[in-house]
Amino acid sequence: MDKPKSTQGRARRSPSDPTEDLIAGLSRKVVGQPEATRVIVPYIQMYQAGLAPEGRPVGVFLLLGPTGTGKTKTVEALADVLHGSEKNVLKVDCGEFQMEHEVAKLIGAPPGYLGHRETQPMLTQQKLTSVTSEKCSLSLVLFDEIEKAAPSMARLLLGVLDKGVLRLGDNSTVNFEKSLVFLTSNLGAREMIREINPDFGFQSVKGGEPRTDLTGKLRNIGMISVRKRFSPEFVNRIDAIITYRPLTAEALSAILDIQIADLQNHVNTRLGNRSFTLEASPEARGFLLEKGSSAEYGARELNRTIHRFLTQPLATLVATNQVSPGARVRVEVAEDRDKLNIRSLAGEAAAASPPPTVMLVDDNRELLHYLERLMADAGWKLLTAESATEAKRLMAEHKPDAALLDYMLPDGNGVELGVEFLQAAPDALVIVMTGTILPAEEEALCEEHSFPVLRKPFLASDVMNQIRGRLSGAGAAGRG
Image (cartoon, rainbow, N blue to C red; front, top):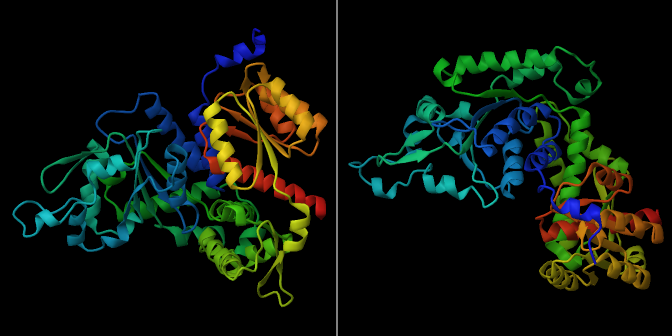
């Protein structure tokens, strides 16, 4: 039987746009700093188009701003989106090179010096290549807190930033033409915070009147500090200087949501069958924000607060077997308002959360078999189908809790199939898998019906976490 015309047309669509994924990934991970995404992404597009200039790095960026505003996080998020891991960054902590002789560690000692063979340079072509991936050949190099390094560090980098080449002590060279170079700095940070809020506090930042001239003033403060610290020839080799603003109350709240979601994903991934659902009350979230918010330390203070008041007590409960598999773990503010109470509601979870039944609809048999083994290990039941017709029969017979639907099927498409499933089972979770760009009308359908969309290729943990998180949340809402 011939495929429907609409399905045939979709099969010719181009793969998912990596630039769209990059913008979405950066915006989701780097909160409250839209300028960073707006400035950096065009350089990556230029590299992907093959139009990056020869004889120099693809882009050189100086990231300025107070601590905890997301400067280093931007580079890590970029590595995650481009290469699949935040660790794919060649990072140089410039605080370790405050003395002039320490800078030589970057390039190694030249022949003739005692022990030069035992002194391996930190910046080599091999190390630069090691932070690339099959997905992307662009390497990310980070010089963190560049202002702390000895002046010879800036002189050493002049050749890298201008010609894209670093000559090592043994006279070999390192090519940076396929690299993005990031320099971070806290220069001018205190002056920026005083400009925003002379009283230095989160509450007054939160309640202050918005100022339309603030971005320009912060940029000027940063530029003055940079020009005092670095030579004109060094500054002129930087493609873009991005000034990070201190995080607002809204940005910190969004970061808190991300941190709690990351903690839940970590629990799901590491504990597997022993995982549980974390539920933080609005009052508990407010407590964490109150304890962990400041204009001076930004999100770093929030990270420490979450670790102290939530992650550590939760780890103690898990280590002492006080949390049952599948339990709801409720986080609330203690009566003395000085800590959080963490309670395991194991009895309610055991009665209401049986192992889910999941239906996977895809004509890729290898994927079907792989996920079948994975979900069996998690104690889940998996139903598999290779066509929309077979999927409809399984849905009618078994009423699964969740359905993973490939967008392009031999006799239909996953979005329309998902809408049909919801009509028969309104509480079912539907996830759409695709390796192409969805048409606008079907993107709208996914948004209307809250269908998560997994872009191929994806990690198996992404599937498991989506199902665990959504089904657990639905169960909790039903019990609340």
